[in-house]
Length: 350
Image 1 (cartoon, one colour):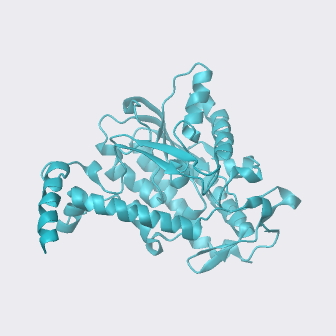
Image 2 (cartoon, one colour):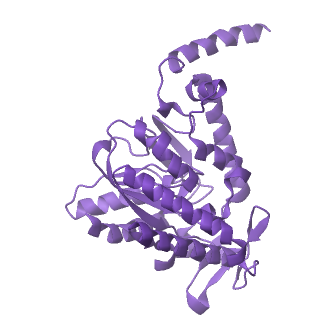
Image 3 (tube, one colour):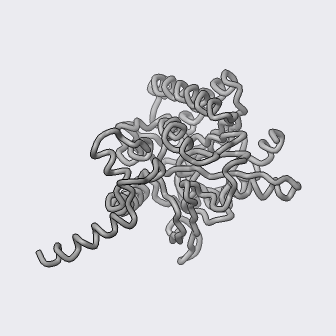
């Protein structure tokens, strides 16, 4: 009891000093990481023991500190493969694109608005609940980095992903408190960090690709039928997202990201024997290849329909075994290749 009486005044003082129950901003949503400067040990994923990644977030929730948001050339949105929270400052594919333009004598601003575990549902909501509240934010292009998990994952079955997709100031007393309370944000940050790590350790463990087993046979024999409804819903979300981006005054650019679960081309195509489970179905590397192709063709079709540039990194590029550390995420070596390739495709737009 005495301990509680001691802690309670401290919590109330913290709320008064750091909370925003009276003033505040929609940017106070606890799902956004803001004004952060931290180091993360990434040696579990790649590099020698003690390898650290330096992450910095600005006051708006962008992983792009010090950049002028009033004249952004490419605003990049996506999930963890866009955020790249295992890649240090200056080495993300956004950094590589911007640096490549600079070497060609062009000053270009590329902003990283990735949010871990978001899907296209979240990207759509960002244009309602996040970007309009960033003072003066203007972008010429919005690059959407799209992964196959967006097609496979039902948000309602993924609590952490659903929370990141929501980014919403709910119009209830509890919703008001969760978006304004400093105490809630502190507790949420601790919980979300733990849950995100649990999700990674449970479903995105480091894969030793050099010793992995490969196969040319998928587990699912009729994937187009199984994913027919999901593909149609995904395409519908892309159309809505394009409208949001156009309404924001920008041009959408749709990019299909690469996957580490398969490699090779044509008769030499193979996928990982290891599989992941999504909504009761298991997908090995060959299944993920087929799903990525279904998603890419849907993306290509919608891109043509809405007049958006389309880049299929998954199809256009070949990667080495050391370019991924799990099914979806790239090592710095892979990131450098992606950044260089995206630059070669984007430089004609400016």
